[in-house]
Length: 268
Image (cartoon, rainbow, N blue to C red; front, side, top):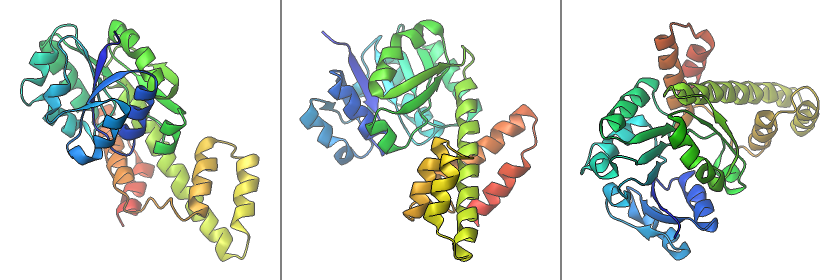
């Protein structure tokens, strides 16, 4: 019988990832803070429960895909969550959170004999549905090995191991998101200048993303900008992630003038 997986968080990314797992034949017990947002998974065979602790099997695997590390801390601190997960259990945390919080969470899990695997996600919901995610991981080697096939069933086209130091995968995710926000913001500004000058912006995107900038970030955000769907200003996720990147930079003793400028621009 396939191992039952506890799954927490069926938001924009969590829903297609949970669907991928169910389509791969995984048995899921699912909790979401707003139950109605998870209920459609029942038709695919998932068991929907009323409390986060109810997804936990002693010694089993739990996946959480929540807004940030504070939300993860709230979940694991309630109703004996870690006591129930206990020795041999693995918690795969896939949020984009704070580096220091990841260290606290890892220590808390270790106190209960559980393993903590850090596995933030690169990819928008449509990439999750298409199984085109990239996932950096960090944590103890046996736990990472245990969940690797699970990550592939979620939709990872690549899993990149950054060792056993918890926080490493989060740093990689924050650096990546900083670069994504930088690229998308710069591309939007550049295309505004081109359009304001009477140039066909579609032709500009087509040329630049096939020649000098043939990277997925420019190709994908070029399409979104043309569709009027890629504004970063005031958007919750970029604002959060740039703030987290700046906090990580302070801990690393590094200056981030570009990130500071981006943060001000996004909130302006």
